[in-house]
Image 1 (cartoon, rainbow, N blue to C red):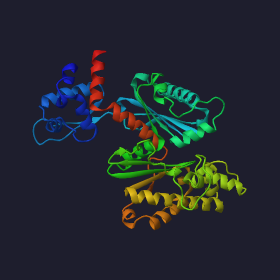
Image 2: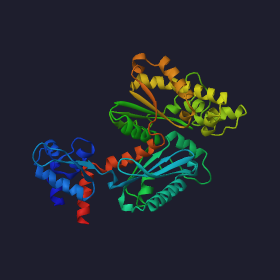
Image 3: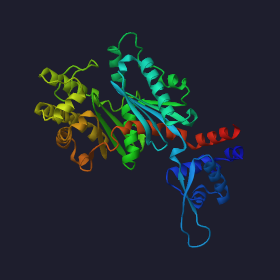
Image 4: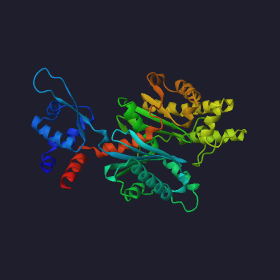
Length: 397
């Protein structure tokens, strides 16, 4: 039966049925048959197959004026699992999610990315194994792995400060290394791209131009336009952390001068506060000082917001986004950062571009990157053709 389904053309594919239900375009066999242009009996056959494999669930019965009441179908988000990891410069979040990106298990691991990919990926693989064991889930329920890495400039900087014989992250085959561990297909992207994707899908799916601003130890930006992540020819789109802040000349770790990271990133603020005699070594320390009422820390964060706003203003004029979502350690410090950003973008960007702009804290918070990593896996695993292959392989097994 499955072989004939896979060979009868696009309109007969079970994968298309699942896709229509998952995206909310149809919820009953009648609606599916109308959209696909096939007989209800054909759709019923496909639906029964998807239900038998746990991909669709008959959720409820709709009331009908006459005849047999139609059954409402829903996508079963618990039909499979994804593994996700968001790597930071000094810590990594590892998680297991369902097909909706809901986090079922997570752990934050203190792990310096300067130790190199061999050490870091071995630890991540170990954490994935522990997670599945604690959840009591077999590996064959995993449909793939999503990995978010810091930007290319940060990875290059980490290599210059790497310890011992740590291998370089640049051009390292991260996906191949994890696939060799038997974890399924692996999708690797820059962390801000996954942050932007996760936040957009969950919170702002109808926004045509969306930006996600990461303000932590370093500063980065992910961009989603018409539902697609914008990466650029060399994968460097959104590198505002290495855009020069107007009037600034501080040396940056990348070798440039006046980069936004060098004057407004959390590491830079900690450096300046430490030089002023405060106990600050990291972005977390800066936030702690601000929350404890240290005036200089609050002023530093607001000034950082103004520098960020200066650079953002140019991006706003260029892209005219509807929403800019902000996440990171510095965003946790209260209103100072947002006040500084707003001060500059509303004075420097074109009024028409800011009139309808929404500057919002991330709604997903720490789950944004994990959800983006999970959605990257899911959107590949549940492509109609991928679902058809899965059903065929299950039948042949």
